Length: 341
Image (cartoon, rainbow, N blue to C red; front, side, top):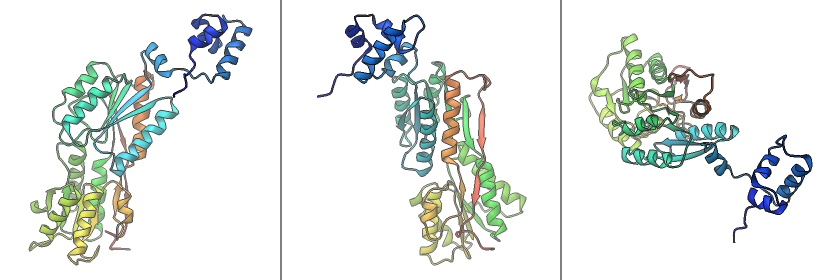
């Protein structure tokens, strides 16, 4: 049977004083005499009194809870982001309530409703690939609850955003492949209605155009999943004019390409080079290790938490208007693309 947790009311009854006197004594209020303070603290220590944070939060209209919605926790990137968020949140006296949308718009809407009914103080969201209706997100703003997007953002909803330099990452990865002598580079991109997919795609296009490398429409494919990458890579490699390199929107897609390239007997990176995006653990345990763009998940999570906490506390460090914080990415060159040593 669960043991009864002593309350302020219990302490008050034991000492025959009012609960408000106990509360002020525990806070060392100057109006409470020394003997009463000592008696209250002695009883509190004896019975392991713990303040009821939820009740305190209700009195202050604060819960000290940050709601977080992610597409899927199984991805290394999102699990890294969560670690960063929780680290900063706990250091600042906040707890985190996590929801997964499972890449479903309908579940994302339910997630928002669940968090709003849980008396959260602020919300961090990375939207699904399906999200094109933004009424549930606008509702958060209308309720006056601080909100920030991270990684996957919606430009139509004006709020704080924390992202990485996806354009620069896409550009640098493609430029690296070109510098290695690749002339026929395929790009497996993500949903272009999401800014992350759009910016990585634009970075690829910029690098190709600046270096006068021809763009082949057949080489630009919507493909952001491991299984689909295997099938699409096979089609291209079996064509009369196969690519000599692939820049993929994420590491899972890059691994799918890598597996197919090896299975078909091509030399990596001599005949076909491969680069991904994320810097997930699978990019390190593959054979060969995959060149990738470090998306800085943990750091992004930390910055997202710092920003939403400042909004919750109405920090003077932030302007009233929404801000966009962009973190640098880093190209990690590994065996899957390194032709020139």
